[in-house]
Image (cartoon, rainbow, N blue to C red):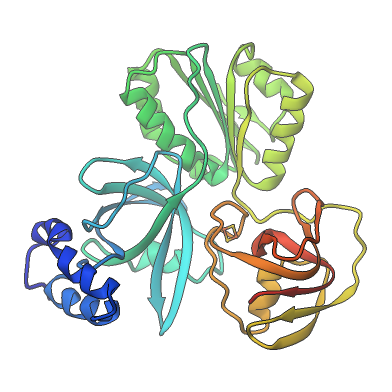
Length: 371
Ligand code: FES
């Protein structure tokens, strides 16, 4: 039930300043104020960002694009960033990060959700979330940005790695970027060619855009490449000289792109983002360690192979987290003693008081963290 229209709720953000002041001085509790505001409209809150679903559109067999309108507390975002989405299921608060595929004025944004088999969030979002439903959003995060490169841009995507790149591509084309752009998207089969209709239309509309697909399963058609990322593919689709490169996809794909880019010694910076949890850096044999959670007064046996986040959750703790990939920093925690290893690079950190990201750090020996 809503007592005021959504448009009024959006405009209320500025009018709530006196209430924020009272909360900041401790005269009101934010949760109490929010409970009353939510009666007026389900998106209305003092500070938290809530958004209403205005459109659902399937963009691949297993990927849905949602269009959302946020309340007046949305601070904005850049194309290519990600946002954390919160929902409550059976009394449990869950969160997942999704890439923004469009950022528009007046709090309108789009994000893409890929079905994760066995997941707790994506099946609900894909099958049950309806137009008009309300979700809570976190702050946008992520460092990918469209390069200032009139000489040209090469976009390399694998699977759902297309989503942040599409957000930037849409924005760059709309703003008149005129340098050559090549997008090469690796998908398993035709059913996973997300946004294929839109990308083909953009290719017709913008003569500087070339889009190619490579199918990693059998069945590549005319004009399509076959197989996983390879240097031969790059040679087939574009002249690489001077191109600025952005890559997004699973960690293995991003690692291959990085290796190729280093060997090719291309100019400029490579921008990459991996979508899956980091793969354990090789060369560390498995062993048991002591793991202490200082604030929770727990000491447990742990292993040196898995992330601190995973092992804390296994003990029933609920550390704040978002991306689980070392990007958003929401799982940052203080190392009190011992040594942790960065799962991506293998680098060791042992300075007491150092901030570490639980999702990409594994204990290297006995470790105490401020959790
Ligand atoms: S959860 Fe995002 S950096 Fe750890």
